[in-house]
Length: 406
Image (cartoon, rainbow, N blue to C red):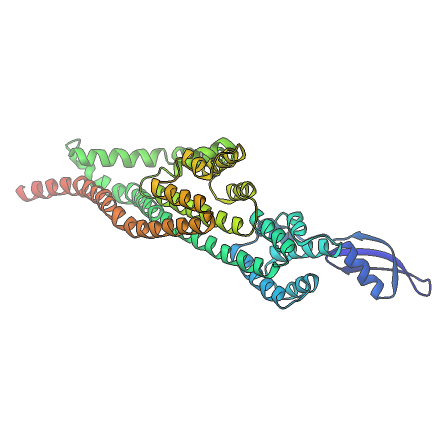
């Protein structure tokens, strides 16, 4: 960040200039190194060009998961080597390329230079996840900040794997729907109209499949702008509704009930809950706070609400197992595993086993997904091809038979 300063040299002469620093305090230090006593320091920025404004508008607003994993791995190595935090952050700034992460680290460095703790500095930037802030807070208090960054990196790698699993579960159905929609557009706008002139000579003696195809194609052509407007309007309305609290809750609940992929998504999210809660609890974070953090970061508002119900039940004095059973999210086998872990005082490792159980179920379900979708694709595509063949070739066969008899 640029700071404009006004000051005096050792000889008493007035000095003005601009210095690049991560904070006002750091700017004062840089100015004093030049032998200038600062009188005033204000943030300064040159007028940005339209290209710069456009770049700022479209640049990402949060730190990518891959970048955060690399950052945690680097902080683990530096902390383990005994490098002071401020020196470590300054060194990382020289090698970073991601502008969002550079901005966040600059802000953190500025807060650290004022004497703030690392966890508090992370929270002030508002770019780090609550789980990262809580883990760093525990690491600072226990003196094991290096291991904390190592554990955060491992957790974020698991989060990356979970996101890939979700993408894998949803990619195939979305591609199928997209191909079917594209096929309908091509057929109705290009294929059927090319045969319409040939069919005009039949003077109403067309087979029923052909009449249906021509009517549907004509409807698409005549009302294409209206259909486009309806699609855009419905899409924007759904987008705005999903971004409301009630809409997000309903949508996240409906996603878990989708055919074929709903169960997979639910198992992925519950594996995330079990693994994250186990890590937080093992790090010494209280149960209620751990549930609160997991509920915010589980990635599904509906499941987050169920976890907060567990939080409220435990706060009233109920057991972990009974509150988990009341959510109706967990099958009996998982509840039995949680119960054994709670009774033996080994809930953290038992939840890791729960997460492994869900991971195995997800891998098995993903393997079955393509096998389950393929018959549906064959039926839908076969029906479209059959309808198209009957609608186009039946009148052509009639026309050829009339021509042959003549």
